[in-house]
Length: 76
Image (cartoon, rainbow, N blue to C red; front, side):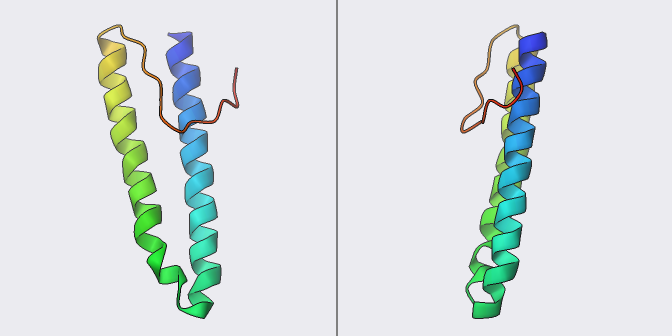
């Protein structure tokens, strides 16, 4: 149970950092009419975070380990 919690926390922190950086980049680049192209990417990152969290919850309820993709290991 502890491993699942740490993996989920690490993944959510990673998604939050990615969305924050993408949103800031979109706002800054919108002054050059390019940042609006990043808005769908930021939304897809958030949606992927939700989908991977649901998949991990299903795997955890079955007693299986799940390795989140592209997750930074911040909490050990």
